[in-house]
Image (cartoon, rainbow, N blue to C red; front, side, top):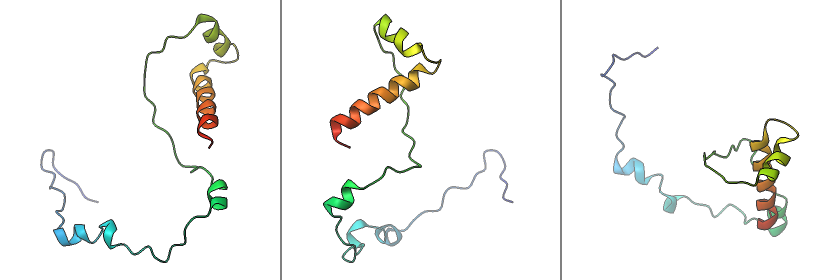
Amino acid sequence: MVSYEKGKVPPPPTRTETQISAFSENKIDTSDIPPITEEQWKQRRPNPYYVPTKTPMTLEIDTDVLAWLQRTDENYQFRLNSILREAMLQESNF
């Protein structure tokens, strides 16, 4: 177990230019990776571990629309987000 005294945390290790340049995208050989076909692209699935970030905001919405969203359960914000996401995906042809 590693422990540190308050205010006495060692600095992170430094990387040399050689170590950094070893990870440069220009030096990665991708010639053995076949291109993705149109059919493969159409069959893609979303990453199951992806969780989009949330951004708090203020939104003006008609009272009757808000009442409609709130009629089924308390989680109307999730419902609104789902409706907007579906519209976004349809427009984007995902």
